[in-house]
Image: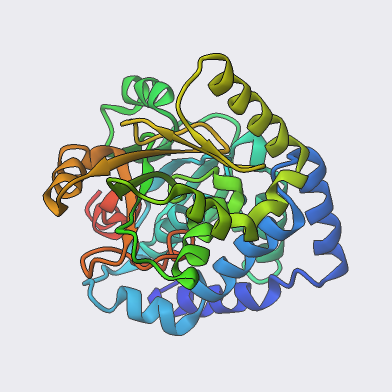
Length: 335
């Protein structure tokens, strides 16, 4: 298939991913049963993001318009993809980019996120015969030309050992940050809540660290975030919150807390589930320098400053929003 044919296929695939379909409803319940973090709401959010942000024909053309795409008919490269499983269908962008660039993807799924992926590939097979030629789900990676692997800081050492001799993108832990100045409106704080609580805060694009001015009004922030208190009705989130709050109390760690979120003074960018780390600043240069010094730990930064992302957008990436700011298309076009 040439590029136009691939884009046309992707549009057809999008049209067939209908979560109101009875078979799809069953799959969503199966995925929820297998991984209790994958609520129906979170699965639908991920599916619709793929349908309307990743597989939309106009957006695909807009995304690819800046690249000089090669003649896809001559490609015979295989790309190993090691996908994470922290949120539903995470890693789909890598699958999509590999297909768009004319390569076969050999996909090692996370055991936490097998059900949805296997179903959507089954759907694709209805319009793309011999689907393994394009999307090959495997148990063990072998016979590949390049690798894109996503995991933790610990697993990245394993990836570097086994995949270091191949062209690769190896992703490690990253966190996202919000810069507050105390003048945020109620609407902006509510939008920030999406950055914090979407997918229960399990993604690298979820805000886990705040930079705030000295004497910031934390009780007011917690009051505004009450709009998201339903997260505590999820038993796994509630267990995490109770455990983390108990540790704070036992260790007499200074903190602010509501019934479902704790705010902790901590310079780390990664925080425990159900907690947010915060750090105070005196001048703009303080948080700017901190972001520069810790750039490799940071995925997204939201705030009112014009250089930052808008509140509420971290978990709504577009095709051109690359993880770790590594251009996957450039990488795949040059292997």
